[in-house]
Amino acid sequence: MTFLFGFLVQFGYGQAELKTDFDKGVKFLQSENYKKAIETFSDVLKKATDDKLKKFCYIYRAFSYNGIEDFKNSIPDLDKAIELDPTDLASYTDRGKTKAYSNDLDGAKKDFLFILTKDSIDEQGQAAFYYLAKIEYEQGKFKESIEYYNKIISLTPNDPELYFNRGTAKGMLMDREGAIKDYDKAIELKPNYMEAYANRGVAKINLLTRKGNIQPTKEQAADACTDLKKAKQLGDNSVDDMIFIYCNKK
Image: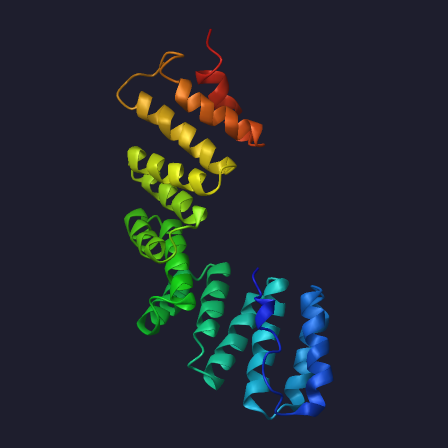
């Protein structure tokens, strides 16, 4: 759960007398004492009249509810924060993420699509592309997922996770060559990317076996086995069966 603590308490207090209590709530949240944070922000909200203070109380109480996976209460708090400040796109991002955590994927998509009507370049727009790509993948819409990854990669081309995720989506569409290129880029950007080595090794084996070559020779599988063994070396035990089948030939 990402709480973006760098953004905490960076506003002026309209009610200075509540500053101490509000700060206590923030400290409880930062220390993951979520129940105490909820109690503290609830007490502040009973006394708060300043809209900015109320907005942040609702946001941080929602984060606290998220910390105990109480999404049923978190989402209404984010609704209230948005009512108080409908121009703050970060609150739509937070609500979209929370809806996704609660498995309301269609509701989450609505929030992220709304963000894109206001921002398709900067921080919140990038977050929207990222989460839409993940949601489309989760819903089995791999082509749509790839399209969203294309957009965010064009904005942030040096993030290895994006190439890895897009490669995984391409693999689901049997575009193994495209997947391998994405894993190549992910590894270029993150040389010890264990999961990328594992996926690239599997994709290379699948390329060898897709035309009926069920038992590729040791020489044919050498490149794939290099990736699988690198993944194993980095700590991925899930590749053991692939190594046993394809890489231990005499």
